[in-house]
Amino acid sequence: MELVIAIDGSAGSGKSTLAKSVAMRLNWPWLSTGVMYRAATLAMIRASVDPNDSESVLGVMLASKIVAEGSRVSLDDEDVSDQVFSSAVSGAVSSVSRIAEVRSELVTLQRAWLRARSKGVVEGRDIGTVVFPDAVVKIYLDADLRVRGDRRPSEGASSLARRDLVDSSRLTSPLIKAADAIELDSGKNSPDELTDRIVTILQERVSAPMIAGQDRVGS
Image 1: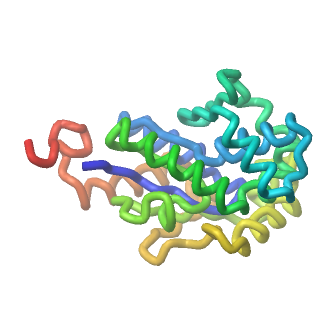
Image 2 (image 1 turned 60 degrees about the vertical axis):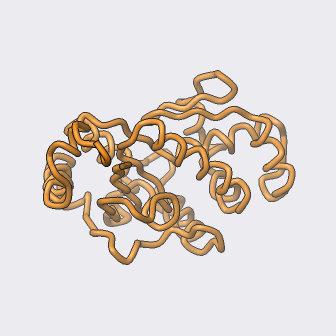
C-alpha cells in the first residue's frame, strides 16, 4: 500500500519547508514537484525555445532527463537545483507548466517516484487533486500575500500573485484546493506547529506500523 501526504498551495506559502519538516519527522522521503517543472523550463530556455510553443517545449522535455529528490533536481545528470530558481526560469515556468502534455509526462514521473518508495510527502500545485487524489492526508497551504512576498524578495508579491492567477486559471490541472483538503496558514503557524498538526492527522488515519513501514498489505 502506498502512503502519500499531499501538500498543495500558493506560491511562497512554504510548501517545500513544510514537506521537508513532515518528512524528517516521519523519516519519509519527500519530493518537490515544482523543481521538476522548473527543470523542464530550464531545458526549454537552454534550447532557446519559445515557452508558448507547446510542441517544441514538449519535444525538448521528452529529450531531457529530469530526476528529483526532495528539493534537489538534475537535468541530464547535471545538478541544476540552484539554476532552476533564476529569474528567467521563474518568469517562464507558469507558461511551461500549463502545457497539458508536459504535465502528463511529469505526473508519470511523480507517480513512479512514489511507487519506488511506497510512501512519501509530495508538494506542488495539483498533488491532492490530480497526481495523488487518494492521498491519505491532503493539505492546502496558504498565507497572506504580503507574508509570501517577504519570503520571496527576489520575485516579489506581485509576481507571486501573477503566478497563482495563471496556475489557478489554466485548463489542465489548475491550482485549486481539493474538496477534502485541510487548509493551513503558514503565516500564522510555525513549520513545527504545522508539522505537529499533519502528523497528528496522519496518526488518526493510519496505524503506527504502516507509518513506520512495518506493515504491508497481504503480509
